[in-house]
Length: 568
Image (cartoon, rainbow, N blue to C red; front, side, top):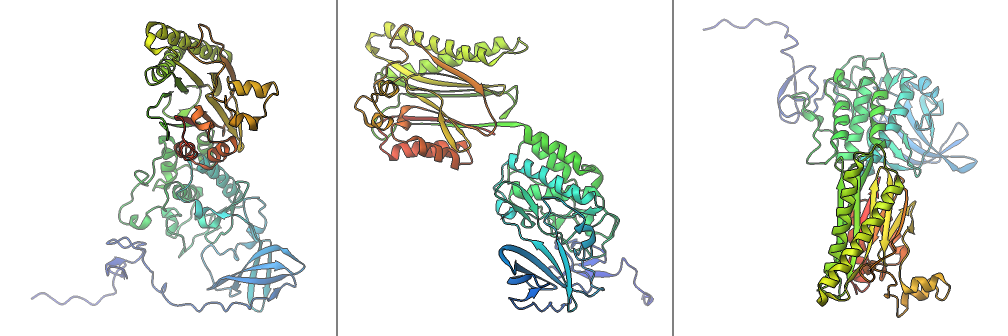
């Protein structure tokens, strides 16, 4: 038989904390259960603390603030209040006991003096402190806006990059006053109607040189080292900011429950498909080891600015036979070249819509000849231009004109070679995007629209009889919509040996949207409806789909083809 064990004081390694979820005994000091990953409660943490009895609604504090709504209760009560003399001035009031032994982690009461010295438009900080009957109150002006938590999973990369820059600037203001933010949950951030962000709560804030023995944090939004008693640096806030951006982009908070067992890098795909550039920035901000992150927010801000300044082109197209025709004489071409879908000086996009005329034996052929000829001509010109140091906008405008003229020549020749296709022809509208410039060329009544700041502008001019009559004052635009000769063209490809091609070029501003379409759309969907559809949708695919459906719902008397381009 073995000897009996000696009765000694257990060592720290022998002491344990039992997980309430799975029953696993964990070493004291562990933050998460080593078996299931659930956050552990430390000794005494589960003891009930009596809540603070809230004040009656209608109470007036400091002869100024009348309480109107009780927002939350507990060790800290929160109220909404209005100014006694002006109900339009609203406030948020936090109430706690004035017990000096109450050391809530990151308590904004304890740090009021530091916070009161900060002035930054993105930080909604307490503006007044008052004490009454053993309680202390912090009064903050109320800010209207949408909680950023409502945009979780519904945010574009461009929006996220811009928001990240704003958050960097706000948190840097705290750093300049010796404070760390520690966490940035989206529910504590407001998005106002101008697109600006405002930080509204600072429950986890702490001094840079302070150590919190039992931090109370929002899981998924604070750095791993913030859960342990230690002095933190700016790298902790880099992680917090990255965690916020991760949530709004991917649609869920970081899965931190397993960090204590096995640190893992953040997972983006398949939950969210991000560009490699953005994923690299977030992965560095969210590195488990603080030494592998950005050392300071200004470095993260630099890379977010670079992401926000990169221009992105997104496009989609659809062509539909409509509700009446039994064949589709429209043709569409979309060809994008360069750095994937990221635009810069290397990006080139060619977009064409052509509406054929002359029946199934002719119209389909004419529209195909048109788009193929223009595409080949432009590609050849671009290959020649690669040897040039710089090609100006006028050169690409001339290139499109010559390409459409070449298409006309080919269609005319095809008609001569195939008498059975007599009467074939086509309209065309072509857009070329290169080096932040837009070049256009068109013949006929296929159109190109530009949407800017919610207003749609028709950049092309119809080569039709009714358009001419409107121009000389014989018809109003309303009368032209129902005129019996509204489909008669005065200019088209294939009708004459030589055709006059209209062109224009202009810089392509960021944020604009383009629509190229055949008259199957504009015969049924008016410009205000086009503007509404183009403005409402977040993706070009959704806009293209609704435009086609709208044309069919209104009658669909012709083929409908659309190309939608977002320049972001």
